[in-house]
Amino acid sequence: MAGEKKERYVIAKGVSFVGNKKHYVEGDDIDESAFKKPEQFQKLVKAGKIVIAPPEAEKKEKAGKGNKGGGDKTTREALEKAAIDSGLFSKEQLTGMKDEELEQILKDTGALG
Image (cartoon, rainbow, N blue to C red; front, top):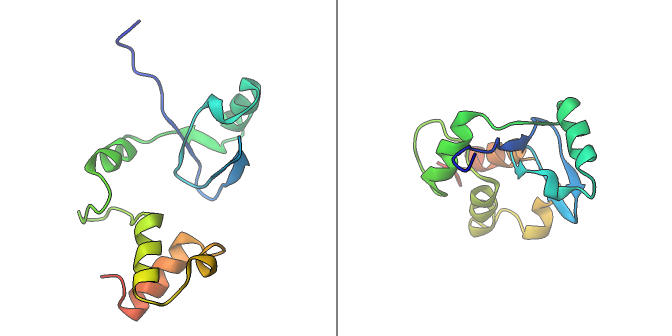
């Protein structure tokens, strides 16, 4: 049907991989186009590495970047911008850091409110 909404999928918690020359990390939107064969996508869905996007993911996406609403997880881009702007890290130093680790350092140093 033309009005049917297609399921959204995201990368599962604690999972990351490269597909179609793009690096996907936890929470990133993904679909079959990231793979050469649709069977690869379905195999990862069955393995639990790709999951159906929770409803709150759509709300966060619609709210836009920089939303300071209560409880929303800070985006990677915002964390990197805060780290670079405060002079704590260079872009190269951030590549190996996990989001949670970076967020905690920024909070501890007062660079993130």
